[in-house]
Length: 117
Ligand code: SF4
Image (cartoon, rainbow, N blue to C red):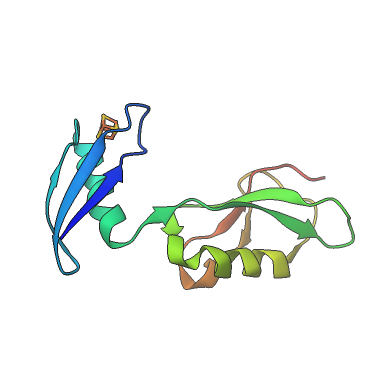
């Protein structure tokens, strides 16, 4: 089986062809550099993305911005968004603060990307 992907690691957007046997990647073609092959091997098996979102703050109306500390499985995006929406952070908040540890058991934390004093 073949999967066709577009590499999103740089503006060149190389078209990648991934040959698979079941869930196993056999080969990758079309990549100009090693990053493309690494991306294709991960994307074909378990796509990962950094999640960015807004989170509410206890006692305040305006939310603040957060993101995951590393890419998380795409299939867990909605579960993670729901956990983020259900959580209320407590000010003061600094950029890089861990607001929610190990979101949805991904091993990644939700960290602040905004200062709230
Ligand atoms: S394979 Fe390399 S050159 Fe091509 S889009 Fe991906 S990162 Fe860019």
